[in-house]
Length: 194
Image (cartoon, rainbow, N blue to C red):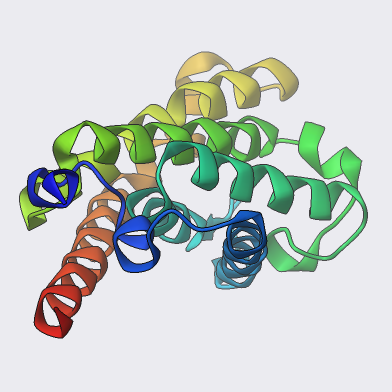
């Protein structure tokens, strides 16, 4: 109970306690489907489309914690690599993982883990803390994303930053704030229920 008071327990654990493997598997599968659905809400841009994936991954990291959130993203990537149409625009296949968005896709695992890790270190409650826990990993996602884009396209580093990072900054702020509001609302609902 003390963990719940200091906010170092993710919301899903506070709601369900330390549950068994079957419940964790259900959370992972449901989370991977959420990411897949969020990838379909897309603004086509080249070489990186704008989607709601970072919002979904932030919410998952804030609610599931580091390991479970990272596992959820890994399952999502495996689904896409196996040919399920879960990537932006219904794309699928292992080749998509090494395309222009590959750095972002692989970076999603680290983003989910880092968001959950911050929650487990006390950033799991309160709007501002939740925002920080969502925003910092979302910004760090641009490191592997832009570097990968630079490495596999004819873009130089400045052009890769302009194409793969700059257009997404305002959206990143908004999505981090939305993720924080969603999870803060979940905590309020849990408190009212208790």
